[in-house]
Image (cartoon, rainbow, N blue to C red; front, side, top):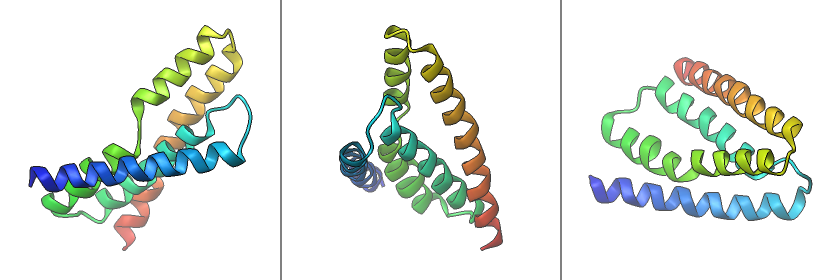
Length: 117
């Protein structure tokens, strides 16, 4: 089971890398859009799989593995502290609030959709 979780995490990290590069190519500005989009969509997907009540093995592979590799709390914090270090307090507050509020909202949305499936 551990190797399956590792494969899921590897796949999630690869998808994160690809999507990060795509977003950074097309979206410019000070706001860390790639990490924001990845974390919010990851919250939506995790809410969905919790809502549909996946069994423990698929949950471990998708929820812990893939979504653990796909989302990134450490990059979020690094970008947040970079904004603070650069004295861009307004953008840091917007980024933090948007990430938490929209992320939690999307997790609930995904859960609601999953329960209905």
